Length: 194
Image (cartoon, rainbow, N blue to C red):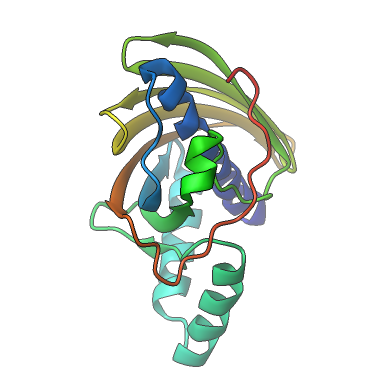
């Protein structure tokens, strides 16, 4: 289960920095401020079971443990993930005006991933990624609605207990506010193909 959850984090990690590719494709910048990122994983019964178990654990977390985790994640620049209405994992990230001007996005370091933008057409962008921990590859299509929203559709491949596994991820992001509140920005690694 740990590898599945790490794959989830890795997939979410890749999604966030690729948002900035939209600004180049649209000759505009991504709007700075607070963003809400939602990702729903699927594709196989083990993944669905692992996600359901993780969601139950998050929901049952004692208040003191939740507070400690929120503080720890806040220092890393993300909000505590929650479970959205459709069963997806929801988190908030902060993009500063300086990051938007430099086409940078906040990013977790989970999964040791490298993302590459492979093509852009109109308001869509295709990308691929490779992660080393756990070894995972994937590709996806991102469709942007200006500088304040996007949707994503990804397919990932990994190995679990020596067997190849395929997962899917449906994602979306939307700008919420110019004020990030308690969500602090974090440093972004480079994304190839910008």
